[in-house]
Image (cartoon, rainbow, N blue to C red; front, top):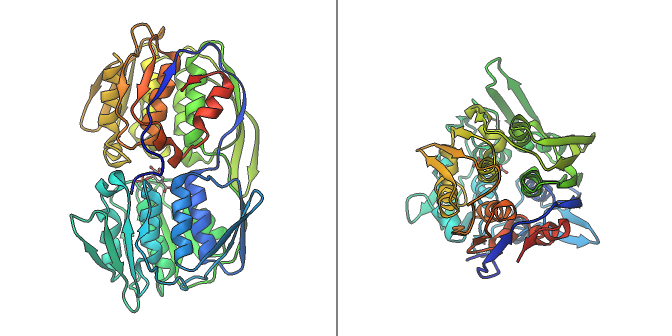
Length: 445
Ligand code: S3P
């Protein structure tokens, strides 16, 4: 299946100052998990601020197909969970559309059940590697039926009793870590996950909040060992999802690049595993002020005031990649307007996102006359602070929402307009993107 709307091109034109305030939709990672853990909890889970993008709604549909009651009352989503270990066999294949997080985490969630679950997705998701999740599931006793090289469509069938494993995650991936932990929820004994490099920690924090018996040890090297006792009881929670920093990134970079802009983005998640872009932009000279920093539901949030800035190129340390993995496309746009070179390394995971993002970004930069050099796992961008000569290209998005939004941001600052072949894919993560940007004064249509 493809995303519900058909492809529709969009064009962004050079803007004068962006002004105003905005509230961006809820964090995608936390929204998926709020649905999933609510589905496994006893009693009621109430969620406000949920991201109502296609990715998260597909996860909701999958959970409903396995026995969770989900409804919406005003602004609140209310789940009556099936209970841990109590999901029912879905009658139809679960369709995750474009969403790697939805598909991979639900593979963990249902994989250890003694039942059959089938997974499908759109053309982008069907190209993405699933072995990274299927390999640990196989060690736990899960049978996998996949036609082509551990990619979607595929079917899982769990054993009578799953085997608790100790698993060292071979690549920095919160999705893999989470899938193994979620499989451990329906497994007797202790499931242990070791992550040599810390990735977003929403699964650990939220499972603890739902009452799971989960402990984390952090070694001096930064390596984390996570122990989860399986088959415990989760209890329904009240969750207010903070704004998604990965969506905030687009108006943020747009305001930095359009001279004389001054915007404030409210209620943005500032979990340190997600703030690599803000850190990097500040090193580049960005005028970003964190206002009203506070704690909400165990997470730090802040309002971000962003003003038009003259940026300079920097070298981004590769160890920062996990905390900004989804933000490299839009950082590359900031780099295209910075003085000097921006050097980004350690980007191998970008090749297996919704598109091969390294190549999609490089092609988009090329189409818009930005000097750059693409390596196997690196990108160097030579900036042009006045935007002269930049733009004028049509960018292929390859069913990747972040490629679409990044290049539309470019069009707001480049000399010539920038077009993307498909703006409809943006609804997977940020349905209000064009409307909110227009309210700030952007010309995107
Ligand atoms: C996510 C983890 C990251 C990220 C994705 C969301 C999550 O993927 O790119 O958008 O919610 O766990 P990887 O685990 O593949 O790095």
